[in-house]
Image 1: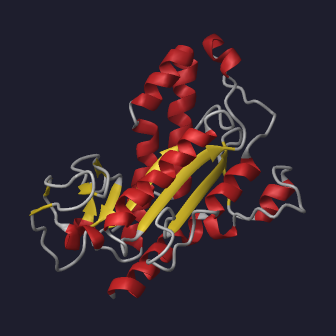
Image 2 (image 1 turned 180 degrees about the vertical axis):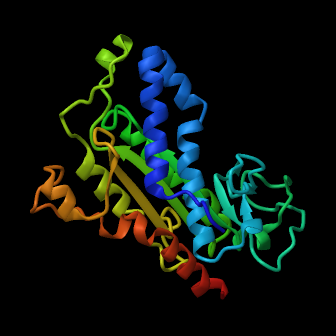
Length: 271
């Protein structure tokens, strides 16, 4: 399949929508654009495209390529929730069942535990402002999403793509329709260390709060095209990480994200 979007094209598309909204309507238009989900949908499409490049049949991807619906609404221990991008298991048919455990006891699971456990789920998020201020709430929510599914489906393979800017857009000049960035770089090391702590769940009998693979997309939107960081050395060279830091983005980079997800799945369930 040709014309599959790359992660660079996706990030640049995100950047263009955000910056055009600032130029046209300031803070309110930028907030409306984010609420529309149009910018983050670029990242959704990049995830789907990369799965297809790695051999996943497009008809197993939900929502389909270039669509935002229908999403799979999967049942965990605490809640049923629409998942951003899923790969359905080949050769398995959903079988509705009544749940017998957790808060959802007696609720209907329209896919069934067996089908759900063999579905790959990848959630995609971004935080574009107040990175330090909102960290605790966002991180707790990220952990809770993994626990919800892993408590019920131990072997389920989960992925998380989380995008943050290394320099935030300057809200103080947005209503003047100016795109400017805050030079102060904050929270980069904290985010790397925190996502390292929930990355790489290799033993499915333990650590249900972890993801099988996390991708932390660190992006400098002040550059054109936007710069995606893939190594510690790049971060160090640009003054975003101290050379003596114990934080490492090496296992969180985009380049090996889908490969790791699919390899983990094959280890648990076969090819």
